[in-house]
Length: 98
Image (spheres, rainbow, N blue to C red):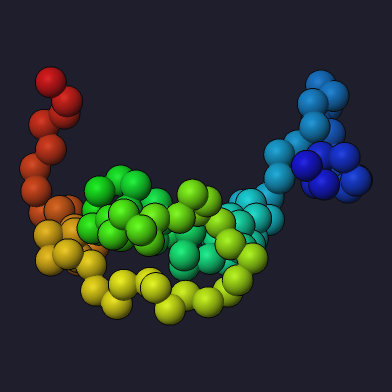
């Protein structure tokens, strides 16, 4: 939003504002990822069923926290999930969607 409202922009001959540069967009994505705590990512994995849920008494209502304490972050993913991160499917033939 800051880029849209506070920066000087160049325009095309037809008067359209030029898009943000790829490097600037990459910086926005990087900054956004850095602002997310490991706790929030773990909560998302739990919600998606990729890692086991905490015991009923340990369930937090919020997936965000003011604390940067990531001591409850699991050290290891389930083997099936971990395999997805290291699998190489580029060799597989893809014939499109049905």
